[in-house]
Structures are given as structure tokens and as C-alpha cells.
Length: 423
Ligand SMILES: *Cc1c(COP(=O)(O)O)cnc(C)c1O
Image (tube, rainbow, N blue to C red; front, side):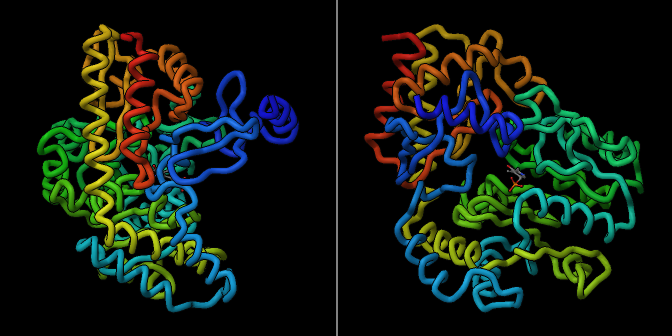
């Protein structure tokens, strides 16, 4: 096995042999040789239908030809200027057209950077220090939000990282998802001290957990009543649930919107944006400092622009959401026929089998933590043997891309059927 040997080598030079924690799993992760469309190929020549999709950005699948051509053309013009360029305006206009709550925005390089700057801006605007986040919510790997954080932090049982000064998180308050009264209580108790609530509209980093009916509109109302900003972290949901993200899908708005992943078309990007009066506080027009060498780089911007163009033209969210429905319906049937205890969660093109006790519904972080991680990893390995690559954690979301064919979906359902033990 080439992958096994490479992992041994990688582990000598990089902690855990990987560049980001969730990529590591036992006994060793496969190393990728190449990827195209809905498929990813390991260095040993095996093909997998990919539902990990680099954890979200690849809404068009791997190696989309239109994006590739656009990026190639851009490379001919140079790949980093350190000056403004015209495509930034085009991408900004596109984003603003789909997100009515966004009037101005700033490009950064990652989702982490965008939430960090968004939180700083909210604090600067309100001149208050506290923020409220959701237990299990993941907003990147920076100090202020690495408390009860999802993603790799949950997978590896270190939701509260070492090395973070107590002072950096003392202003981060936590509440459970899908519990509007808990938010109202928290804001009342900390009246006049909270700058913002930051929330993933669909929890995406403890597995997908959709908001219950009216939860998000209640969050919007409660933040407004308490004069607190609402930061919607749409790094996953943006341009996926709908072109206008969760804001369009659920009919809500935000004071600040965070985007990432899809908006860079598979290249590094992050975006924070909102009302003009807020955004004008960002340097150099205002006193909230934010900067970055690679920000707005023409390659990411070009890939993002082309990706959004394809999303619009092909009505991609409709297509992938439909496939998501088919997948969840089939999985529900398989789960009930097989008698495997568990719960099928998700919305739109996101889905997950949770091994929850007695098939209990998973509606927040505490529920997710009750799920059987070992059972999930057993399923993960069986699916891999069947040629299907799911994210290697109970707490990560399965994504469907525009490159996934009806045949891919059929084969995947068959693999689940076999591996959940009802054939
Ligand atoms: C992935 C993710 C981030 C962090 O984005 P990076 O580009 O990995 O820094 C932030 N918020 C959410 C909801 C995410 O899923």
C-alpha cells in the first residue's frame, strides 16, 4: 500500500501526518493521486465516490473544466498583484446581489480569518467585548471561538484547545443550538455587554444539524430586541442551500455574513460583509484593522466568480438539494428496515447517518456527542471498501456536488444498504 508508506513518512515531518486534523484516521488515511468530478482516486489506484469533497468547497465536484479554464487564463495574467483588480468588483457585486443583507464586503483568505475579522468588527461597532456562540459551533481555529468547537476539535475530543489564554475566551458565552429561550436568557443576563451572536444557520461541523422550525427567525428577533448583532456563519451554507445561502433558504437576514469555501471555487477564500454603516468601520475607511497579503488574490476570485456563474446558470442548488432528499429518504428506509439504531440528519445537499442512542433525533451538540463514534468509523471503513468516501468522522457533514450523477447516488445507496446490514 503506497498510502500506508506515505503516511509513515508524512508522520515523521508533520504532526499526525496531516495538514489539518480531521484528515487523519486509523490506521492511515489514503493519499490522493488525483480527483475528477464526483470521484477521488488514491495513490494505489482505487476510485471512490467523494462525499467529503474537501469538507464543503467543491460544490461543482473536482476539477470542473470551466473553472479550470478560467483559472488558466488568469494565470497567464499573473496570480498575485498586491493591488486592487477588476474581478474583485465583479465577485463583490455577485455576492451582494445574492445576499441582500450585504452591502459591502471584504475578501480574506479563509473562513477562520473571516469570522475572526467579523467578530472584531462587531466588537468594534458595538464597543462591547462579549460574544455568544453555539455549543459545537465551528468558526475556524482561532482563540476566541475554540470553545466547545466542532469539527476536528470535537472529533479528537479537544473542543477546548490547550494553549489558549483564559482571557481570550472569557468573553465567549455558549448556548445550545435550537434553543431560542436559552439565547434570550443569556442576552438578558449579559444585557448591554454582548456585541454579537455568531451562529451557523445549519450546524455543519458536528454533522449537519438543521435549525428547527422558526428557530432562526426567533434568533433574529431576540438579537434585535437585545440590540445585539447577528453574525451568520454561512461558510458551509452559502451558495449551497441556495444561491443566497441560509438567508434565502430560511428567509432570514443577518447583520454580518461570513462566507468561505464555495465562494473561492476550491481556492482559499473568506468573506465578511454586511450593512454599509458596519463595513465602513473596517480599515482603511474605519478604525477596525484587518489586512492580508493574499486577500482578494486573482486566482481565488476568478475561481469563485466562475463557480457562481455555473451555480446560477445550471440552477445547481435545486439539483443537489433534490439529490440530498433522495439520499435522506433512501437512508431513512434502510435504517428502519435494517433495525440499525440511528438517525438520518441533514437538509439540502447535506446529509449524515448519526448512530444516536435508540435512533434519537440529533438537534444539538449534546445529542451529537451521545452518538456512537466507533460504529460510525466502522461504517466509514466499510463504505471506503465499497468505493465511497465519507468524511472520516461522525461529526462532519456529507456533501453532494453538481458532479454527482444519478448513478453515483444509486451506487452509494446500494453501498449503504450492504454496509448497514440489510441485504
Ligand atoms: C470550514 C468552516 C470555517 C473555517 O473556514 P476555513 O477556510 O477552514 O478557515 C468557519 N466556519 C464554518 C461554519 C466552517 O464550516
